[in-house]
Length: 65
Image 1 (tube, rainbow, N blue to C red):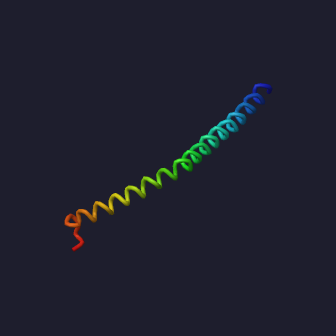
Image 2 (cartoon, rainbow, N blue to C red):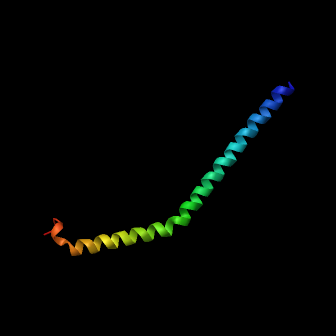
Image 3 (tube, helix red, strand yellow):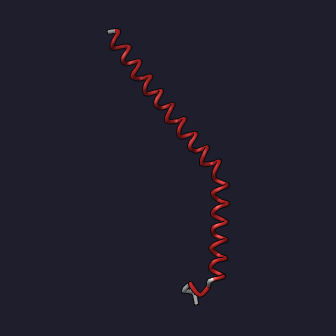
């Protein structure tokens, strides 16, 4: 009976531990994504500006006549 109780306690504790580890990992992942968001937005704006400038300089390459 002691073995059964010990097994159940360890089993439940294992699930609680895994829940905590997964939750911690997700939280850190979200924090990393939020920290990198301004840099990603800045790069996207620079790329869009570069594309617009390229299209103006090379209008003959586009199909817009």
